[in-house]
Length: 88
Image 1: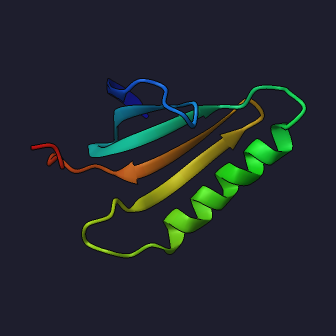
Image 2: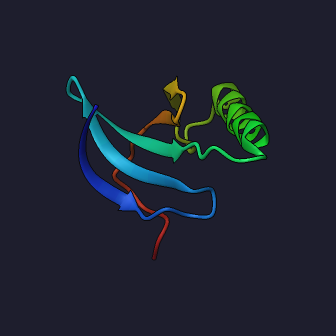
């Protein structure tokens, strides 16, 4: 994935939210860095739950789950990207 810009700083979940391009497909990547700590398995379970919820959602007003990538030190979730905003 070619990152084109940061969309949001690390939030409460610890994820960076980045705009990216994958072979011409514009999408959003949530990048979670997995820290080695006591509750690491709980953190991974929460992210797995988020992935499963995103996979199950199907609504025109909700971003769509595309795929995810997991390695020992990070989990990246790729979502559809929309150019609109909810801000007024």
